[in-house]
Length: 96
Image (tube, rainbow, N blue to C red; front, side, top):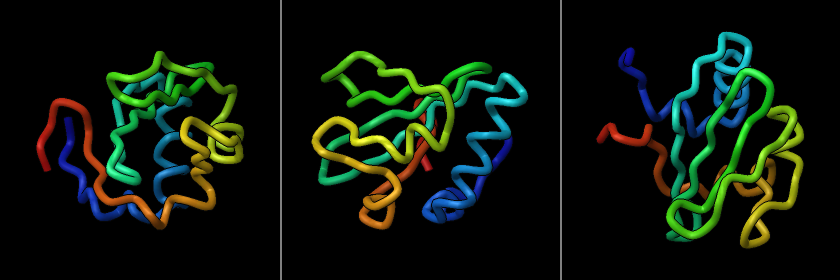
């Protein structure tokens, strides 16, 4: 995996662009976020993108990055409005 400046992912527009690029290329990184002391995972796939509460729920699939970010998710999360509250961002399996 290429080195990333994980601080860039605190910018919602950077993250959306990155996830869209992954969906277009078929790359499936497991992007994790900590919000309200809970850990969640976002995984882009070629034709969908998933979101889950790590260790608590199964993946829920969305058709696009915009659909995911506009949806009301687990624990009343809305990524568009709550992104600035994220405490930590990392790729699953990698410690940054």
